[in-house]
Length: 385
Ligand SMILES: [Fe+2]
Image (tube, rainbow, N blue to C red; front, top):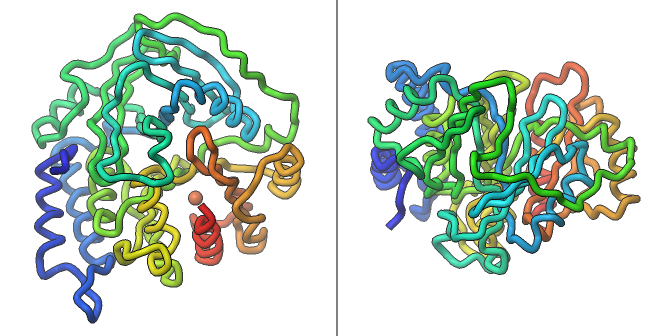
């Protein structure tokens, strides 16, 4: 039995996926289409306004990646070596050991490990991820305004948080939801009380990590966390997106269907230039590795989870060459070009976080978020995972 962040919302989707509104193929099998999603997305946007939630959740403050303890420093080092992020703080308490990475103008990346079991567990076996049971991008933490009001409204709607009380320090007030049954993501909210963005809890003490930022000027080209992509099962796509919309102030914008790979890339954004949340799912559910395409195959092997973090990258050709020279391996070379407005690539997944790095150069006045050609090539490249 799945435990939902919001049972009320989940029951709407349970009803929808068993009702006559479900699109099916000629054999009666489930097929995603955008009609029900668009209807639900509009309804939740209106509901947010009616409930007074609009304006209470801002941009992404940080993502929290949990690793196995013996791989945490290697995970931090990889991020230092593969991006322009710097290590700005490290601390630990009885439960958590945390490293904070920052880059100008970007949400932060927190890499942590815990001494006790966390609430994030796969409900089904994941053949390619079970050897790292505590490893995933677990939490998206958004900046919140008037967090007490926000939580009171959401609790009234049935939303479940991990703790009864806020975690408070002199600098912030924080709370997070239980993990989503659709995406395995938890949504966190931080209300800063001062201008000091210090994530350490009251019981934390500073620690020294041996990780070093190597002197590679090319890394300064790799900055802002542009988007992440989370892979969810075909049947859970609509619910995962609407749940995310209900818990944040992001809105579903558009989807790109890649029929040849049985994949849909769906984009949710709050404001132009802000971090974008991407959900990717199959058009049809998983059947087997040969028929289902790379997206559903990934979910079968790794479970629903964040697949990649995309970093905005300037001078992507020379930066990419420098990463290759430094030993980084890639699933695909650079795709797209300046005329199309986008150039991108995918690294191979990290053995320490299971995450892929995307490097994305957005050129000039390109006003689309993705191009169908790049999405197709990048999706195809993930078949190698
Ligand atoms: Fe991406």
